[in-house]
Image (cartoon, rainbow, N blue to C red):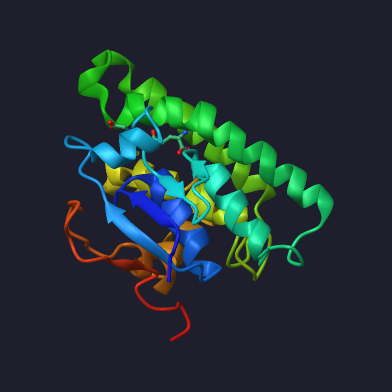
Length: 220
Ligand SMILES: N[C@@H](CCC(=O)N[C@@H](CS)C(=O)NCC(=O)O)C(=O)O
């Protein structure tokens, strides 16, 4: 039996969102953990831009953007279909692209400030906070962004907000301007979902025994 192949990296927020979609739809894949400093030749041959995640379907179609992987998975099993309406879908798509552009831009310059201009660190931190404050106002205040059911927006945004917190946990936790975002993130941090996508796989080498993801279905 052949399964899609997923090149992934445990802590990469893009790979995390792809793994969440794969886990929630229970799309069995062969997983290949990538060490970014030593990318497998077969991954570069499939996608020369050299970023994770990369998904190769059993028909040899290549998806090398996390959102395309999520869409491919959802096309086969749209678990989010009935959980939000079309205006929410629009909000969702807009916020996801804002995150991938603006939030990520400032997050990199805040989190990895040594690679950028040091003095600008707090400016980038505040630019991210500004975006989070806007989201605070439109969040359902329920478990997930649009209510009780998890959606694409949750899996796409939360890995980046997690990274933002990790840059300075005490500072993030002491903020009093974004209680809804903090609750949302905390729920995610304590979830089975996060636990089940953060499995330690050793970096893949061509002759290794096949490892599968999901490791086990989410509800077992
Ligand atoms: N737009 C891509 C971005 C993927 C990306 O930048 N992944 C990072 C890891 S978080 C990466 O692979 N970087 C390549 C490297 O560090 O060599 C996506 O959504 O999949």
